[in-house]
Every structure is written in structure tokens, then in C-alpha cells.
Image 1: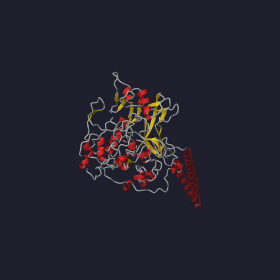
Image 2: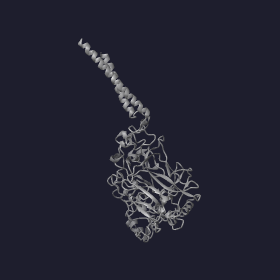
Image 3: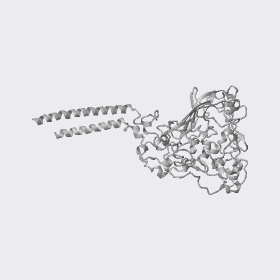
Image 4: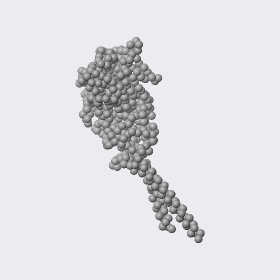
Length: 561
């Protein structure tokens, strides 16, 4: 009798193990994909952010060892920006030479991995397309004075604009069509608007220079693409003084970081670039500035940043930004679509048209065509290893329906890749239909070839392609393009980060190859194995119960005897 009971007990235990195993297999806990998502065993947990990040209070500018208002060189009236720079260089003797070596000055960059020539001087986008022949308008965000055409003197130290990065008064502004200069005499802009731009007190601004700030960096980066919130999606004027919910790092109620807190400079060269990024930082807090880009999450937070080890297991395949940027353009709309093919429409009197939506955002402009704006946008997600290539004027295939402006490389089998959030910007722009390449238009200028003067695409494209130094067939058409922008800003608090359910139940990452998520994915073999074991467990329980019931009756009868 005891032997039988022991046998039944063992059988019951085995059935219980089968039940547990079937549940675990059904959940995907024994799959290769789940195991592959684990980080290397050699990676040791690191301390939480609060114990690693250099705490600083940027509510006040860093204390300076010099009061510029006392400098004799600055006790004068300045007629132009270059005159201010000449005065600055009497003390800061190496500053201009350092600036000359930076991407902010050259607008040129050679990707060391691909050899591709990038930078604003080379890249073609699907906003205003390219700077060639359009310099006086585009270079209003250059860190220099007078970049009006391809004859600009990049060797001149006095052409460096010190004030655009170091103004602390908030008064300094470059004129929108002044090739990088501020206004030196009263001017109206836009023409016919009645908005007058007055000359600046350059002496007062020069006497009050200081460290860079969110405002000085944002003067250009918040307005890329020709207006507020146009390009990036995660950089707009709200980031100058963001709420804690908008960005925990840059908010005065959070860490109160300036841009330079993460984008550390070395001899005026600022780390962090959209032309070459770090898809997966494997150095963590040991990442030195000499490594080229300390502007990564891991350089402060480490490789295992969270107290929950199950969440830390995600870090190997999922970028921090993916969870901590649940949406972008959270407080201000960003441009998502730009159709150049509809530009040129005018009213009955032959005047340009500007149409706006209920929020005052321009949805049509005669000069530029149709726009679509969106707010609080859920990102697209891709595998990204940090390498970016651009199409520029490379020919594309006949019959292509959509041309990628840039390609963010990476994949699930690439050990340097992780899943990143991106803004996907789409548009329709001109292309050379004879050569099957994108085309550069000459937009800005007073000459008849400028599109905003003649509204003749044939003239504008011929002049623009010549300025770019490209062969032009003389034939053009329209094609849809897509451009990707990796997201790094608007970091939400952990309470507002992407929830587990968003991915594991609601399908946020549906379509992402190379990642198996229990609760979301259905693997036929795993499913059938789990179901089979579950049914086997049920049958075993029934059989076991039947034996116990039968033997119980036998024992009862024997006892009665």
C-alpha cells in the first residue's frame, strides 16, 4: 500500500512539473530568442544614475573668472559682428582657429566608416533640399558672418561669430536672409509684413557673453528646416525651458542640464552627430571623451541602469530612447509631410497664398507647397548601429516609388545594433527624370532663376544643379522621399515611459524582425508543444485521479470485510 502511494506521489509530482513546463514553454521562456536577449554574463550590474551622474545646477550660468563689461577692448561701439570678433580674439587668441576645425564651421564631414562626404554642404534632404545657391537664407544659422555664396572665406578668423553661441542677454539674433549677419540698420522682414528688425546693441551683448545655454544652441537647432519644430521632432522651442514631463534632463525641475552637459566640447568641437552615432554604447560610464562621443545614455547611466534586473535584460537589444521617448513633439507640432509639387499656386490677383490650420500652423504656402503637422507622435522603430548613409545624387532604379534620403544601418543579427525610435519624415520633391537622381533647386535670390522669384521649376533646377556641380538632364519630375531622424531628446520620466503592455500586449513593436516577445509573438512549434504538454498533464491528472478513486473504493471494501 505504501509503495503504491509513493508511486502515485511521484507520478503526481512529475505531472506538476509537466504543467509548469508547459506554461513556461507557452510563455517562450525556453526559446533561443529569449536567451539571446540576455546581456553577456560578464557585464556586471552598475549603480543607479543618482550615484553616477555628475550632479550640477545650471539654474545660474557657471561662474566666470572675468567680467567682460570691464574689458577695455569691449568699451566701444561696434558697427558689425566681425568687429566684435576682432575684439574677442585679442584675448581668446586660439578660439577662431579652433572653430575653423569644427563641423559647425565647415559644414563638411567625412564618415570614417563609409568614406561618404556629408555635412550641410553635401547632404540633400527633403526640406529645403540643399544650401547650394541658397546660401544667404540657409546660412542664417552658420556660426560665421557673410557665408553668402561659394566664395566665402573659411580661413578668415574675423568671420567667426562668437556672439551666436555666447550671448546671455537673449537679444542677439541673426537676420533670416543676412548670410549670418545680424541687422545693422532697420529692415523689414518678411517683406510687406510690417515687422521691423532693429539694429542690436552689439557692445552690450559683447560685454555680457558667457557659457552656452539651451537658448543659444536652440536658436539654430530648435528652428532647423526654416521654422520652429520643423525638422527634428524632439527639438523645438519648448525645450528651452521644458517641463519635467517633457524632458527630465533639461527641465529646471529635473537635472536642469544645458545642451553642453551631454554634448561635451573639446576645443570648441562638440560631441554628438547625426551623421555618425553610437547605436550601442558598450563602454558605459568608462566611455572617455577621446572616444569621440560621450553623448550617450550609457556614459552616465551605465550598462545596467535599472533596479529591475528583468528590465536590464532589455538593454542589450533596445535603446534607452525607445522606452523613454514614448512620443515626440509632445507640446508643439512638428512637420511630418512636405509636398513641393503643389507650390506656386496664387490667388486671383496673382499674389502668394498662405493657409493655416485652426492652431495657426501653415498648411500651404505658395513658396513651398503643402505641409502636414502632427503633435504627440508615436515614433517608428528600426534596428540601428549608428552608421548613416545618404542617397544624395546617387541614381535610383527606374520605377522607384519612394527614395530614401538616408539609410540608418543595422539589423537583428548585428551585435552593434539596437532598436531605436525615429521620426519618419515624408515628402514629395523634384528629381532629375533623365538621370534618375534627386535634384537641387535654386530657391532663394533676386535673380530670375530663383524659384521664389520666377516660380519656374525648370530655371530653378537648372541653376541649382549647376551650383551643386551636378550633371542635369534638363528633365524633371516629382518623387516621394523619406528621411529618418533618430530621437534622443524629450526624455520622459520613468512613470511615463513605454509600458511593458505596450510591447508585449498592444503590439507597439509589431513588425520588428529578430526579437521574440512572450505575450506578443506566436510561434507555432512553441504553441503546439505547450498545448500538447498541457493536454498530457490534464490526461495524467484524470488517470491519476481515476486510480486513486478506484483504489480508495477497494481499500474501503477490504476494510469492511
